[in-house]
Length: 116
Length: 111
Image: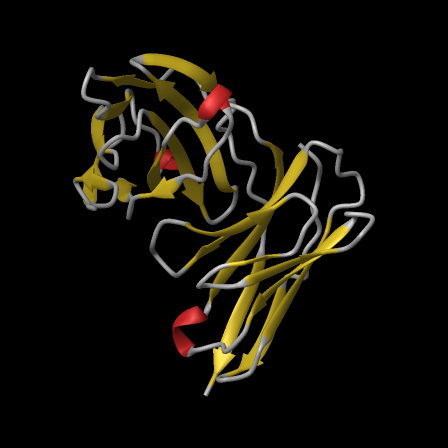
């Protein structure tokens, strides 16, 4: 079974631009979560989508947004990029358990975003 | 979710067992212990989870104390490829998929 895939793997942008990152979950997984990882803040939760709806949200400004499509693929968008947005952006997918119980998340390789 | 405490780093000799401790003294009765690891520049990888019984899979064993206030992840025969940051996370098994990662333990396996 193919794992979680993320595109692109590397991206360089300049301040003020916007960027869209893509994530394809494992087949059959309907939950997709996004995380930001920086050396200073570590791994931080951005948001989670399930059945095309944002179900959970972390403490990030509105410049960070996302969406999920009917095939469970997800995109996240960052507008008006700042230098501090340079990070590894990770996507994780999970199969929803019976009764809404949590199942382990499987992470993709990430997209390394550099903002100049 | 309950807070966890892990040592910042530890070394292990290749071929030996690596025992990674985690303290979670405020764990609630319905919270599970999850372990993930992150090899440099890759996404985190799920290892194992448990509630109160000891668990074993092809990657590792998880030993949870009877009072559930601490646990130990055991890598039975560490290899150089096990060098990674290991995260211990305590959470309820609900559809709240937010994982709170701490600083983890940086494990270095030496030849």
